[in-house]
Image (cartoon, rainbow over all chains, first blue to last red; front, side, top):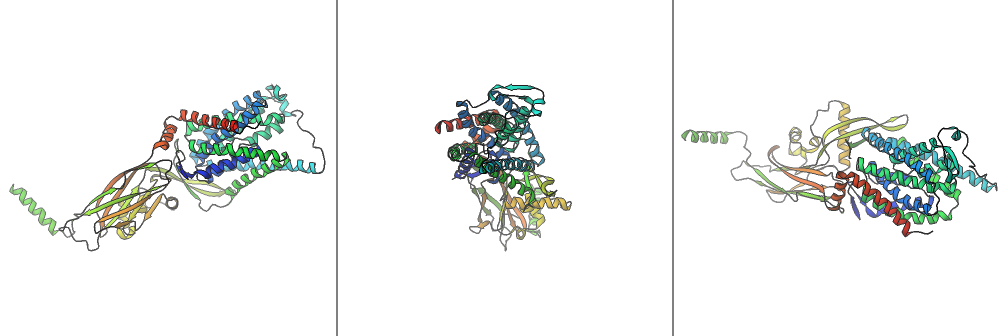
Length: 309
Length: 256
């Protein structure tokens, strides 16, 4: 059944979009990530303009992260102080992201920057995850005990100014890397239409050495707040959030996530990380191919944009 | 009194003696609808132009019959055409050209291929066909501009925004004709103008313009209006919807 989207101004097959939301929701439930890095490219591929896709997926990320954040809240697995630092910086980064997004669109370089960011960030994070999980699997195979990492943040994090105590995480670290992380994720998330879970979770684990039982809940709170702010800004400044498209994706995503989570519980952590790493690498590679392979049509047209598309 | 009569007699004499037949035919045309409403089930539609040629026996004979050209043009905007070039192995948008006053949608139907109805100069002057699609026809100032304009034509044609139906106008009788023009699903919103032009022997005899509005309506319009006119409220609504959907999902599927 074809459905005309009021903001995207484009008819879509309703059940296909619903299914897309469910499939990405499945992946996000399975791996505990938002899935924006899959959803935004797929929507663009389906004919939605990048501006509408990015803005609408930020709303979808809010929905898909909310139920998870609430579940972690009930279990008390959130470092609220750390989350507050991250999301405050995240909102500031998101504001810059909306502005840069509009500027790049005017100059016709939005697609290029999005593609480059996908290649760089997905490529490096995906490679890191695959490598790390393969090492873990190899060690397990040889019967070695992997030494538990993370007793305390090392070296340079202690030497930076603005030392702040995060008692819940039993951490005393500089606020500088925390704020930089929040800013960076907020900026990239808004620019690329992703929640940034695949960036912030490894950063909290390996960089800030946050205890693993608090990492996911805290990052979910940060994502809900930052992406909610991004959604609001995109709607208010660019009028690019499509509520009908968003609702289809959200409902599909929430349902798909339940089944994904079920499958995720049956898989080992190293296997999950290796699979997610491969998936992230594949999306990054897809963008790399697009940048490198000569296009069939070198010309593109777009309307001259002032504010709204 | 007598001077007026003399003037009339003179005018009549001149008219009948004129070597070029005076065009006396007139057109009466109408659109099947004056509004295309886009609702949630909109998947494209059609607009039909009906018309008749009014002529009387005193008109000059048209041994080769009449030709009719119907064009439908949508809102005009400036568009930017960009060209990708390889830079250090990456395909990147480099050069661009802003082309002003481009119809975002244009469809032309005619009884015969346009180049057999009239000559290119006349078609261009009347804004018909490919030459007319891109607004003012510049004698391609340089090769670069020509290449960008050509790309615009190619892209607009391939995505169905510019359509030509060389035999789209059919005569239902000797003087009654109709043409059905496609309105694609991704049709740009805005005011449209249909223009019906009557030709005989390559010369335009009469024309008529008809207005058409393409607009969202009902729920689609409500959502779009809210997004445009109350963006703050719309943004808050979007966030609230996302939070509620996520919360509901958590409640409905709660396992712990």
